[in-house]
Image 1 (cartoon, rainbow, N blue to C red):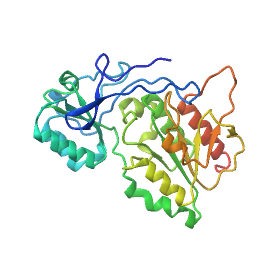
Image 2 (cartoon, one colour):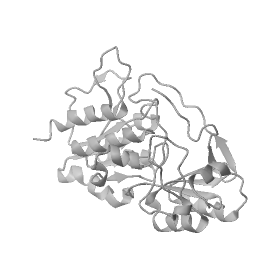
Image 3 (tube, one colour):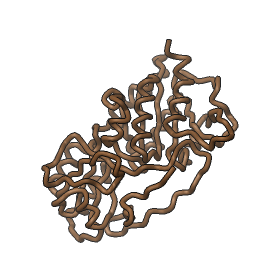
Image 4 (cartoon, rainbow, N blue to C red):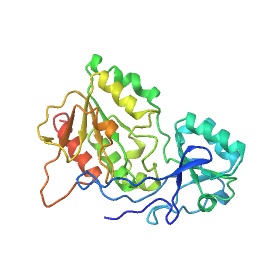
Length: 310
């Protein structure tokens, strides 16, 4: 188990408003969440920039280099025409360029995570960059508006639906394994937050073993509100965490289920836990402290799938 902060030795600054960044806060350590210490990585997208615009990132050295698109005009085109491809946008700290401020507003309007970073970090991703770099997903994510009617009508139509919620997963191998298990266990869609996750990187695609191409991935504008809507529509909202007395084994699953798993070290975020019908514990030897997040999800999905897949 090991940890690696993004862009060490220099920390990124996560912005609240352009030019007024706040430093990353330390995450609370939890010994009993389902997960493991993260490998940090970003992502690349299917729309590749010119060769002169691509540099190897300062992320996980074991991962393939991500695709980063640098330049005001190039990033503006992405944000206006293909925002679902963009995982996050990095801006030069204190650049004073009003055009960058306008692009930040466009990114926030599309619920894309933005960050203020030092210039050398931008340069490590793309040259030239004009003070802005977009990091792109390997696969364009769906918006909730595109699919919500299907899931809202499921209970009325008597259709089984299984929605996976993945939060705080920073290890791309972990996320790829979650996608592979979700497809194999007949989940209908994976919902992910707009921040606090690794992107859909080449390593995610490799770890998914082809499942990424077939599994629907969705980034709602507001994940908390989306889970609340599904609960109001009659879904059973379940979380996986070791800190609970309710066992996963032979739990009475309903036909419409939301199954949520947390990420490395932090477990289920409070906004998910508070909406859960039940938080379920997976049986585990006392000699072990926790399951990997993707393993925990796989076990949870199997317990549901064995009652559904013939």
